[in-house]
Image (tube, rainbow over all chains, first blue to last red; front, side):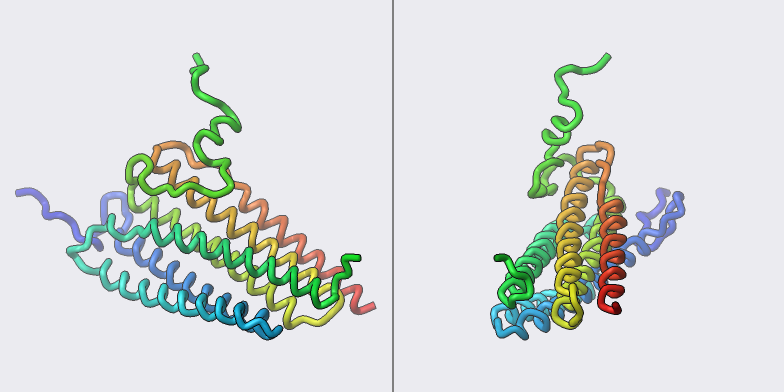
Length: 127
Length: 135
């Protein structure tokens, strides 16, 4: 009789416990979502306080996005513990691509905005 | 015997898409790798993303909260380092994913050197500014 298909938490011959791989990845996503929310709050606090409500809106969008990512990570964690879910379904390459682009754009926006504010406030004299 | 039809050096890297400023979408290229390698690449990228976000937050806080001579410059330096980290880590994730899908060696990355040099520079600048403000 052939061995049954091992579930997601069966220790394989290499010693790698598949379930812990997924759990580490999920924890990484949760930490990242919290970092995104903190960055959004800092973005809002730093740039919106100079009287630019658009930056406050961008910061709020980031906080909401980070919150959505946290909820997604929690829901995905429930799915990966489902014995019927194949381990190969866990990697979310599309989400990694989206988050990568979003973080690069946020960093660029924060840098460009800060340069403009520092110059406009007269702290750096370009003349 | 070398294959003269295959490009080498920077030409090979460019042909492989690793030299493009905007990293190409690795999905749909080559064969789906072992999911464990994809997850490891994903976790590494997320760790660098958190580092970039921390640098951005620190830069913004330095500009808006700190109020000593040179704090704006320090903030801009942190923001620049955050931009560089975010862009380089994203590029590295895409390049690693592509290499795994094409069963190629993982490309070398300058991200650790960038982070070490950048952090050292920020610490040096901050120390100098604190000394200048104390005098």
